[in-house]
Image (tube, rainbow, N blue to C red; front, side):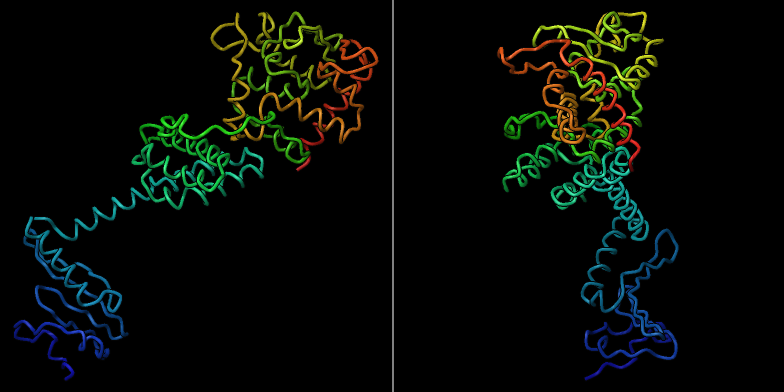
Length: 410
């Protein structure tokens, strides 16, 4: 038997009979909006356009209020009644259901704003313009594939070391240990960004040092594709560290010496007029000559007013009597978003060796002498600091000009 429209609240104000599913299924829109009451203040507002809304009338603080419970049929009669009972329990505890909903909504929005994914994307947007495009793509792809599905919706301040480790274990278990280490590094940067922006109190990734098995030792990472080298040089040019660090970063690819030799460079060993830097090679304890290109001299002239009265070209910020930290260049690369698997301070040597030979076609023995490597000859493995010196002078200038070309190529 089909229920009749008598479920509309009678004019005498007496309560109507409770609604039924069969009545709701067959309810057609009338010419005017109608209210069909179910009891306990809940009713279905049937609009003339066919829309149907669940509403709950209640009083709080002496005022009559209205609470939306959803739309029919998305919210069934049973579900609407459950929402009504939940609201009545709040009222019994002197809590306004409407205000409680606003508070809960605000809390959800705050959790969403401070979710790991939201902050990670904010971090990515802020830092990725200074990265090589290929690196940025890899970072975002790893986050979207390996992190966001499990951590993305969680408030970043609530993510604990064990929760983060669970996510890393999933990556490790599929045999991608190297990726797991890279994800841990990116997550650490994101957590530290959250800390400095006031959305988290600490970086849980710091508690996971040693939690992942180490990767196999490999050759020092280096950027060797010309387009990637150009991106790297532009990133270095845009780095906002101290003048000492910026100049060291800019000089590193031009001279491609060992990182320890660069940071310990002394003014007494540099002859700007002769365009030479002569020093004792740290690894082989032999004298070495680095011809200086015009670009290298310009960088040294830029920093000389600041450090030229001291011993070191690149002194420590804490003391002029000590050279810059052995981790300074590497740390700067990391702050630019360049992972250790992509480039290291030592990688400038591999970058020069590869491109000088493959792209600029310089003989291997000239390059190896400039790298201060022992080169086999008729008398055995040997190194002569002045051998091929004229060729090396020309090579170093051609190399500097080539880097300028790559830097200017977008």
